[in-house]
Length: 189
Image (cartoon, rainbow, N blue to C red; front, side):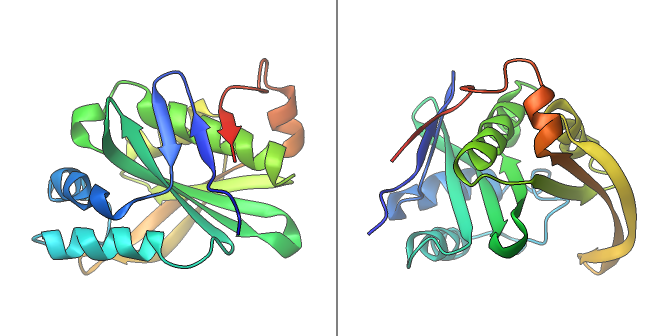
């Protein structure tokens, strides 16, 4: 059985979800402002939180990996990696509690996961996307060295409304040219 992957940063612990995390997930995910760019149940209930956590704790890792973002002893968000093994690329997606906004925590978590992906999975590229109106999310992508590659028109639906997405990516060569890229997050397991 694979050892769980844990990544430590200066302020965060990125680790597998545990069943006990459902209450923390409920605390941040029931915030309507937090979820406005996400297709979430409204209202978000403890049942939804338990289902979310259960899906992330059952079964093997496969090509999808979810990290609970732990800050100051509680889970404040999630960052996920979708590994496309055959083409050596991965997507990342993240969300963090509103009380943690504007503290650089999402950028710290995303940077650590991108570093881990390039180092451990030997990726050629990491990409992500966000609603064009979700400025904070695509700013995180820019801060971790991603480049805007295009806008996907009418790519998704959130709460019955068609959404355009900005699509960002970073190539291995770009990541390697970033000063001090190595060792920002320390992976265990």
